[in-house]
Image 1 (cartoon, rainbow, N blue to C red):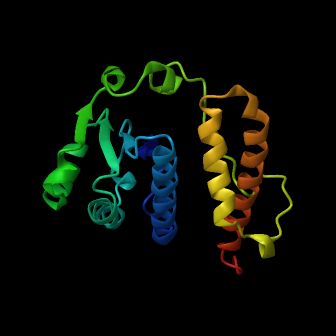
Image 2 (cartoon, one colour; image 1 turned 180 degrees about the horizontal axis):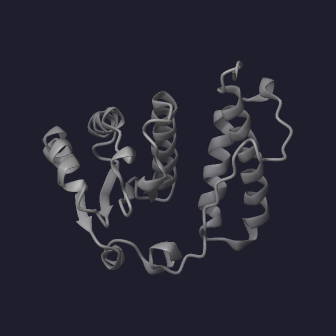
Length: 204
């Protein structure tokens, strides 16, 4: 399950290419985990609450639609558009004609209580009315205390596969929690290195 809070996205200040890369990274990671877990389907919750026009990025939406239709038509489970505000009516009028029938059939407009019709309460974060205590907290590179060496911004495919395997085991076995936490720290270190390596060298 991928959760997206649209109100935190600023189309004017975001690097479109990096946003595209991050979207593919999320889809591939979620797809691989779902395959390992036996379903192969990735579902998306798009929280549209408090959305404003600056949050809408048509070039990215077109890219995402193309990618979903061309590469993930059978991998996507359902896309839940949550708490759509009035402003989204005009945006939906732009998006809907771009969708093919397969992708369009997987998009559902719902309110928060209806999430429980699609997601088990134990797997749904508390912020969305469920019981899962997980809370994502963004940590910027500038405020992070990790010493960054951009020459080491590399990670192997095997590292990612190992993390997916241990995460799958962690979902059913509590005795691998420490091992998974160690992997998460290593992956976070790599992600910070990767972001730093992509920053412009001249910040004038």
